[in-house]
Image (cartoon, rainbow, N blue to C red):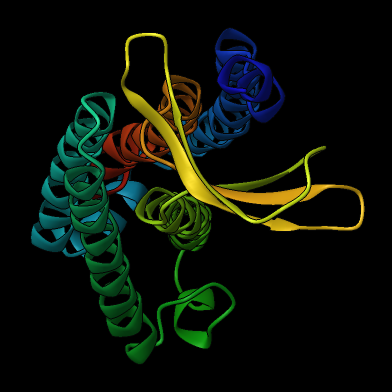
Length: 253
């Protein structure tokens, strides 16, 4: 029965296709931010002094702390993938939790920084900014626009990481139907004697409905590793974008 059931329980997983699709998506994100950076470069060339002055009003220390936070979060993201590859699900979830916590810390610092600017009347369209030079108007518009767009990507990335953490932490189950009647306890083993599935079966209308719990399954692990790797690629992109934003906005003085 083992050999007959297992092929129906596993789904085909195309890891290479999944990674290729993710890289295509990341390419569209890179093109989006490339256009934003090009716009920034054009205006910075036109208003160099105004951009330099605008940078002096930003909190460089907070920007540096956020840079360190995101770089560290990339490390914990890599560690999470490495632990899942080794089958250490709890360790993978723990590292994902650390990554999520640092992403939230980044957003908290960014909100504090935005709040400080807004409290001083510095935001796009405010009277304070409108009374300043055209270059400063453009600088603050780009500052809020670029960091806001990046923050949106951080939020999306956090959502993906939370989803993966929940998915990995759950003990995976799958229900199938067999053609034999009766109530039985099942324990399916591989050719080498290792336990692959365990569960119980209840008689159903069309046969036996079996709810099985994974004990170990290479197909499942490969699928989850690929999904976590794709989530990690997106998170690394978020980090790389900030590595460009930090010097462009904070360090141009």
